[in-house]
Structure formats: structure tokens, C-alpha cells
Length: 513
Image (cartoon, rainbow, N blue to C red; front, side, top):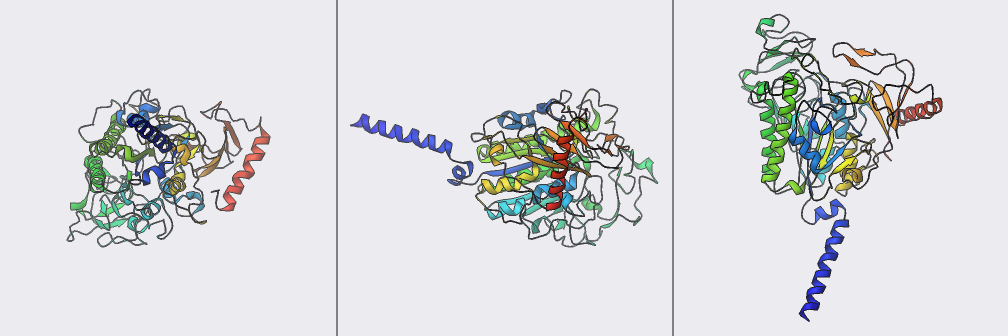
């Protein structure tokens, strides 16, 4: 009798185990708690800038760990080849080229995401998550004519985040201060901040007039107000106690990120951790300075990897690794000289920031938007490599599925549910993707079509091929990943098929199924 009972218990337990393995992630997680989501969003990091994607001159062991323990996607894209539109699309699920005013923003721009619309953080907030945005923002703040010395609103807290600690725009744009929730952090009221992108204000020295004060000199632009020995885009005065020290930015925002994880370890959380690295000005902490042999750009890649390591270490320490989906990616492709004389070009050597791809940041060629994309959740996502076509814009619809939520018709108009690909259950992602770099391109299957355009072919300051051409371009990405051979003339039927489809996607105002 005892042996029969033991056998029934064994069979019941193994059946339950088999059933659990077949139950979707969201259902299994809901038995205890929803899976946490940590999105680490690097800046200007190229497809070939990390060792798990082929880099040999720099080693990125922590990013490589995510690849080894999760899925490394080889056909994942940002929604644009520049930062503001990529970030807008990721958070809203809408192609930024559909909306005016979503180009690269000045540091005093108004918030470009309307409060009240469904966003990635507001979706997760509705599912019971605590949400935080830490690091680079660059989506505008306030409603126009912002006074940096009072409450700053609307902002992240009005579009789904419970907490934020921000670089308001970029490291090379004023104001060079952090914003926590609705206030400039560390601001002395007796030294109010003034910001201008139109004309000089106050008596702060500029890089244009006082190059002798600089510890890093601009190569093009970036010659206005000097902060921490580096001249920036735009003018600012005041706020001296609140100004950041560039060498400490990575440590500061990483500490905020890990503190948020610690604080909310007992409840589901969403952390949007947008790093400053590897954007200009590249000013690594002394721990990393000179360590890569590739100058400051290589050094801040090492610094970025260390920041990823701190996040992973915190999850491990708290026993949260298995309960947390970590996504690592970049807002657009790489750029080498982006405005400062930091020896990035001279010390590049054999390193190829774009790997096998053509172009880079600002470009319609694939290096503009094909970026590293890694997803890890131990015990639930089997490690491997995937060539599924997906885009950061798809995170909103995918997270709706993973948290058992329905999107309204007007929500996330261009976001596809690629949750099966994210979890490694399918090698199929979306069936087409519109790439954006000023010029629009369409990827469908192994084909890429770039629409005709009259723009410049080269961004001279950065020496980046932009992909503009008055004639249509067509590439077979399976045979020609580097987009070297335009086969539009050999396949006119494919051009006639893809050009109208791109126009239809542009005209209809949405693409989500």
C-alpha cells in the first residue's frame, strides 16, 4: 500500500512539473509574483562594440554573461538611427516619424509624450509594477518655457513612472544637472539655473572663447558653456552645486538603479536604466581611463559593462535573477567622432563598432538601427541565438501579452507582439519593419528597400554614410549583410512590391495587427 501511494505521489509530481513547463511565462509567474523587468538601454553602442557580437579589442564579460545565459538576437533593431526618436518609439509603441517634433531634441524641449496615453511604464504600472526611469531621458520636460528652479512637470511621473533620476537631455547638452522626480537634485535656491539655446546668458565662459579652460576640446560644435572643463551644446548659468562631474555619472546613476532594485525587491518592478555611455563626452572614471587601449570611447565601453555587472550582482545578491527578465540593448548604432577630440578615430585600430554592417548612427544603412539585443531570465528562457526580426518598439505589445493585458485600438499603433521570440519559443518575430534615419527603409524577409532621397550621402562631421540616394536601393540581407550591392535594377519586381507597401505603412497611421 505504501509503495502504491509513493508511486501515485511521484506520478502526480512529475505530471505537475511537466504541466508547469508548458504553462506560459506570465501564468507561471502569477502563481507567486509577476516577473520583474530590467531594461538596460545603452547609448550609441554599436552592433560590433561588445565581445559577444564579435569585438576582440574590448572585452565585455558582464554583457557577455547576459548573452551566455539568455538569447542573443542578431536581427533586432532600434526604431530610429538617433536617440530621441528611438526612445519615443520604445516607450509609446509608435514610430516617431509619424509625429512632428520627435527629432533629436535640445535640452530645453518640452515633454513630447502626452500624459494619459498608454506607455510601456504605464502598462506595467497597471499590472502592479513599481516603475523607475534612471539615466538619460532626452524626451523633453515640462510644457514649454521650463523653470528649472521649481517643480518640473509634466515629466516621467506623468507618463507611467513612479520615480525618476534623470540626465534631462544628453551629456553634451545643458543643463548639466540631474533631475530627481520633479526637482533638480542638489540645487541651491540662492543660485538659480538659467538655460538658453538661443543666445548666451550670464557670464559663464564658453569653449569658443576660452579653449584654454578645456580638458577636452570639441571637434565640431560643442563650444558653448563650459561645465567640468568640457564645453557643451547650449548655454547655462547658475546651479553650480547641482552640476554633475562627468567622471562620476556612471557610478551615480548605477547606484540609483541598484538602490531602486533593493527598495522594491519584494514586489514586481520595472527599471528603465538608460546609461550615458557610450555617448559623448566620453569621460570615464579613473578606474577605467586608459584601460582599453582605444582611448575614452573604448574605456567607456568597459565602464558600461561594469555598470551592467553591478545590476546583475544586485539581482544575484537579492535572489532575484530567476524572477527578473533583463533586456540589454542600445538606442541606435555607433558613431566614432561625434563632436569631441577624444582620439576615438586615431585609436580605433582594428575595432569595428558596427561589426559587419554598413553605416552607423544617423544612417539608413543597417548599422544605424541593428543593435545588440539580449534577453535573459534564467530557468524560464533557454540560452541561444535568434535571428527573429524584432524592434524595441515591440516591447509594449509584448509586455501587454506577458502581463495578460489588452491594448486599446489606439494604443501602441506600431508595436507587434513578439513575446514568443523574446522567450525563445519561436524563431519568428515581426514580418516587416520600417527603419528610420530621415530616409525611411523597409525590411521584409531577407530584403531591405531604401526609398529614394535627395539628402547628403555623407555626414561629414562624423564621417558616416547616410544611405541617401536619388535612386531606389534594394539589398538582399541574407547574401549581403553589409549592403554593398544594390540589386534594385536586377529585381524591379521586388522594388515595385516594397515601395507601395512602405507608402501604405506611412499613410495608414498604424501597422499593429
